[in-house]
Image (cartoon, rainbow over all chains, first blue to last red; front, side, top):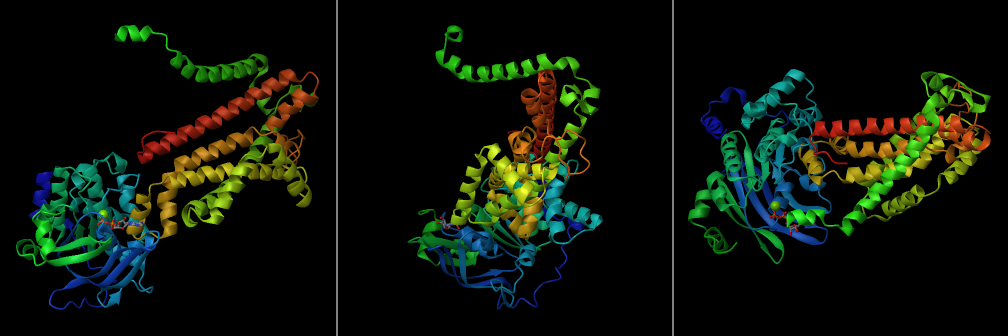
Amino acid sequence: MYTQLAETRHGHLGPNLEFPEPPCRPARIDGQARDLLWRVSDLGVHYGRKTVLSSVSIGLPKGKVTAIIGPSGCGKSTFLCCLNRLSDSMEGCCVEGRIMIGSQDIRSPSVDDIALRRRIGYIFQKPNPFPMSIRRNLELPLKAHGVRDAAEIGRRIESSLVAVGLWSEVKDRLNASALHLSGGQQQRLCIARALVLEPEALLMDEPCSALDPIATGVIEDLIHSLRQRLTIVMVTHNLNQAKRVGDEVALFWCRDGFGYLVETGPAQRVFEAPQDELTKLYISGRIC
Amino acid sequence: MIERSRFRFDGHLLLVWAAPLTITAIFVWIVGGVLLHGLDQLSWSYLVEAPRRAGRQGGIGPILVSTLLIVSVCLAVAIPLALGAALLLAEFVPRRSTGARIVRLSLDVLAGVPSIVFGLFGSAFFCSLLGLRFSILSGGLTLACMILPVLIRTIEQSLRGVPNAYRMGAAALGLTRTRAIVTVLLPVAAPGVLVGVLLGVGRAVAETAALIFTSGYVDRMPSSVLDSGRALSVHIFDLSLNVPGGDAAAYRASIVLLLLLMLINGGMLCIHSLLKRVMGISAQI
Ligand SMILES: Nc1ncnc2c1ncn2[C@@H]1O[C@H](COP(=O)(O)OP(=O)(O)O)[C@@H](O)[C@H]1O
Ligand SMILES: [Mg+2]
């Protein structure tokens, strides 16, 4: 399956992979120098009385892979949750600041969070396919978003499974339980489940941390193959992984229990010429 | 060494085995006794005929029908109510809120109330106050009150047992709360819900005390749920207590009740394991 995905990267599986522009895209994404999908300013997050993130300001470029690195507990997952308002579903989570997509603050009550999450998928650290058949896992989000046509559903299921390189492995057992898949396959199914909705961005929270090195490689290749049509924001623990897949890197840190953004920029620049002392120490592995 | 320890007398082991063996022995004793006394005249006609001479002769046809109706009324009322209440407790009310605690505590107390008390309540409330008199409807509603606490608590537990990762996963896919509950959480919790219903049905089918004062004694074929009807357990109670020479008939009816309970249990367990297999959860009860 590894070789097959390597093929994907060279475009052999091209024709099935069409992700048309979603109809509800906001007017225009007015980035300045670069085309930004999110522009986050002064983001602060609290759980009850506990402050987890404070004054995070960052722009996340469109069509790129942004790798978020940093030690455990500095609020990387929390930050990711805010980007598609999944933070609404966490108990006691309170978000302040501005998170702009285009010219709209996604925190404003007029934004439809359901539509927002259709446009921006989320992959969890631990693969969480629903304990149902593979087909049902992929059908469920489609039906929830009003796709009723059986042929359309079938087409989308196939193309998303092809995109994650799972089609040849599961096409004969779409009705088998998703829990019978291996960990890496489950994670790819979760990615496929997000892809059936044809999103424009994918948030991935340490998608490989529960997987073995081979499955990790497969997922990394998958991220490479998705980067042209999707904006990806990926949290990772692994500096080498950030180097391998990240176009942009953002380092988060934790001081006195507050998480904050230390440095962000193009991956090459950050890794070769870090500007912050903390970044220098962290990427040279002297603190972690 | 290994050989010797295999033959060593182990006092602890004996203690450990004593409990299950005792339970099995009691079960065999009860079932054996019932079978011994009542198996001789069990036949198809017994299941469909009407009772004669106060049940000493004839069959239990109308009684089976009444039992079925009472249990149906009970489940038709109890399952939707229990699902609603359990969903409220498990998904919508904060777990440690005062309201939820009070509700949970009252449910646990109610679950321990003797069934005769429910019988008296049903008789006062449904039969007299609501004017339903002795009827299958009164009996079914009383049974519903009786099994609701257990049903709500087991369904709540099984909903709580659904990993949070599924809730977050559903939210991340842009499913609304309601949709997530209907299409993800309830199907995942279904095996547990089924066990709850199974416990409830078991209690309902075997119930006597709550029915004597509510659905009554009449052993005619009921024409509607507003008719009085005699449940199987009430029939057994009546035969063994009020009918001289009714012992053999009581044993015969008991066999049917036992078979009925086993059938319900077996059926539910089949559905349970089927559900688990379909969803790929490793089998466990
Ligand atoms: N639901 C929650 N309630 C309270 N505190 C939380 C919750 N989730 C995370 N936290 C706290 O927020 C901090 C950041 O967590 P997280 O975003 O998961 O960090 P990371 O992903 O960088 O490891 C941690 O200190 C954690 O204890
Ligand atoms: Mg995390």
